[in-house]
Length: 263
Image: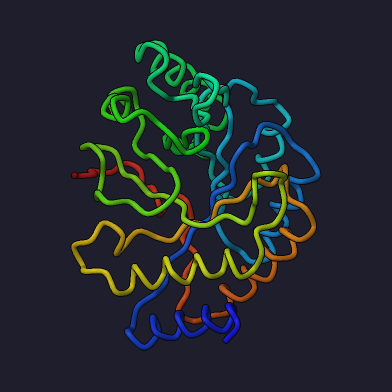
């Protein structure tokens, strides 16, 4: 059985159970208008689905805010750290929001970025933090609601419902890019297989599981897509949007505002 047939079979199991397989789309590293961003937004529009753009506030350019003005409300903006700068020592995994600097410095930067995002994007901005490299020191997380964040999004399945009171965590679970040793496409088998595994785990999880109701997140990076990745994404969204058991959830529904999130 091909991996695409496996996806169809898994979605049919959701349909047989009378359930909708919910998914959402997050794209990272936006800072400016570009041909790649135009292509991303055109793809979103062609399928009529929502998109969450994770924007780096320290390098945000006016061209991005201008470019998004004509987009509908289901193109939302999240905050991608502050400057997307690595502060880990040599030999450790890259992280901006790690334990290597004083917590007050890191939180101060995030607060500065939060204000810039609010001013730049208004209601399009959802106060959701997307840590660069999907990493954040656990000790920083409790402070996020205190400075105004209502959501957190990283990568891979979670083991807890929400990390702290007042903070809704919704992750992404699959992405098409191979980062090392060179950038490129991971391939249909790997990515679709990962989506199938994630959807199956959700479908068979107990109702009390933190993954049961969390929409499955697709993570992309428009600035580094090659033609193989664009072709794959087109095929994926075409297949998903045509299936009656699938619902692509807009960002404002993934992270509703205001909210009362309880751990």
